[in-house]
Image 1 (cartoon, rainbow, N blue to C red):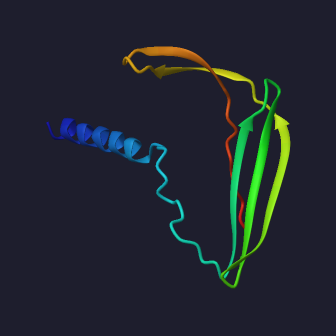
Image 2: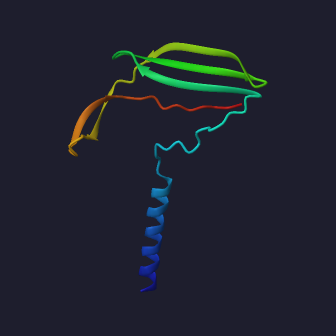
Image 3: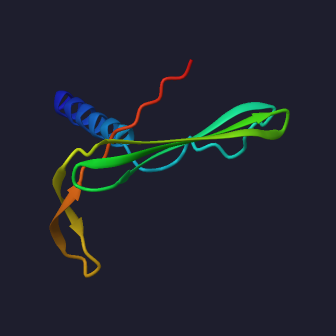
Length: 111
């Protein structure tokens, strides 16, 4: 009986760990205030242009001694990643399979 209880406990612990570690779209780490004494504030976005190209935008504000010193905007085209199929829920609570444009994953390396 004890072994069965231990197995159940471990199974429950694994499920809880998986749920707690699953990714979500919350912005827990979103900056609420910015130290403008000496900071770089960067916004990066990717917009779909057409079937073969996406637009990469990098907008950077340079803050020095509490004032906006410079704004830098870089825009370039990058290859589109194509299409993917996904299931979405419609307004009338029905599941529907739709074609969506693939999105880039974004990773930052800070030095």
